[in-house]
Amino acid sequence: MNKLKKQLLIIFMMSTLCCCQTTTYQRPSLIPSIVPNTQKTPKPEKPRKITNIIGAVEPIYMLPMKSAFYARIDTGATTSSIDVINLKRFERDGEKWVSFTVTNRRSGETHNFEKQIFKRVRITRAEEHERRVKVFMDVKFGGEIFKAEFTLAEREDFDYQALIGRNILTGRAIVDTSISNTLK
Image 1 (cartoon, rainbow, N blue to C red):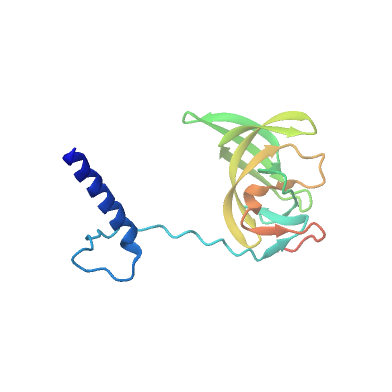
Image 2 (image 1 turned 90 degrees about the vertical axis):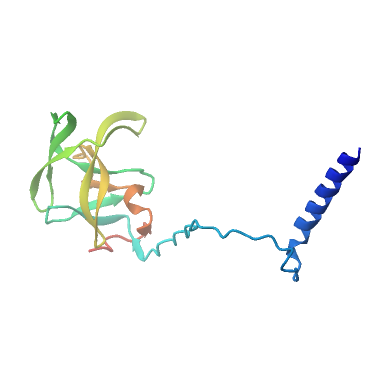
C-alpha cells in the first residue's frame, strides 16, 4: 500500500510540474534541460501571386513551333489537349512511344513529333468514352516556358486546335471568360 501511495504521489507531482511550466518565473535548478530540435521545420510555401487574368481564348506555343495556336481555356478539363494527325504508336527500347504531326491551321506551319507515352487515359465527352495517350510537350504560355501534359486528339471538328486545362492554369492564371487574347 505504501508503494502505491508513493507512485500516486509521484504522478501527482509530475502532473503538477507539467501544469506549472507556463508560469513566468521558474527556478533554474528545477527547469529540466530541453534538447533543441535539430530538424528544420519546413516553411510553408508561399502561394504564388497570380498576376495573369486571361480570357476564354488565349495563344499557346507548342515548341519548337514558331506560330501560336489559339486555345480554348477550359477550367473544367483536368488535362490539356492538342489536335494531331498521323498518330502512330511504336516501341523504342522497350518503351511505348508515339509519333504525330501538328499543323497550325492559321499559319500552315507543320511539325512532326516523337514523344514517349506518359500514360493512357479515358476521356468522357458528351457521354461518349474515348481512349487517348498522354505525352509531355514543351510549351510557351503567357511568357513562361515549361513542360505540360497533353492528351493527343483529333480535334479537326473543333474551332480551336488546343484546349488548356487545369494542369496548365493552376497557379498561373485567373480566367475571366468575358475577355480573350490577353497573352502574347
